[in-house]
Figure 1 (cartoon, rainbow, N blue to C red):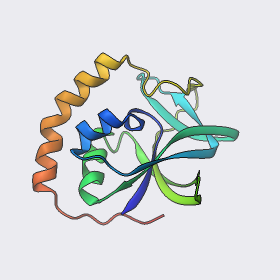
Figure 2: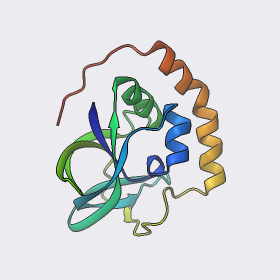
Figure 3: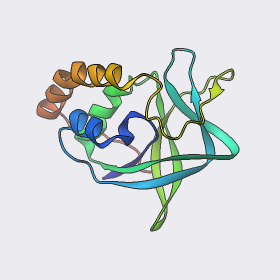
Figure 4: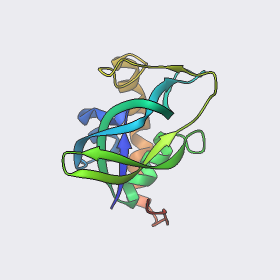
Length: 147
């Protein structure tokens, strides 16, 4: 298992379940020294910022989960960065999806899991369901660096 820090749509249990096909182990976590931002295309990302704090969840993902999440996050639109998150059990090394845009504006609403409304995200999750199912069935192991 490799850990992922989820700061957006994957924070919501129902969306995680719909995407991954199972209830991935998740625990609250905080990413210190980063902030959530709004990209020009309207999606959320994170970037380093001294004094910043991003609340999210630490997810334990297997290789099949990573293939699904890579497809959902439209890699290489986003790429992963190695981070350390704080949990109730102490610091944990994880990967986070990020895309930096120098002119991106901070997104400080910790209550929202996405910039888009829930209905739009749910439609996107449903539309992605066939691809996620295909990946679960045909997943081939990939090598992912451990943070």
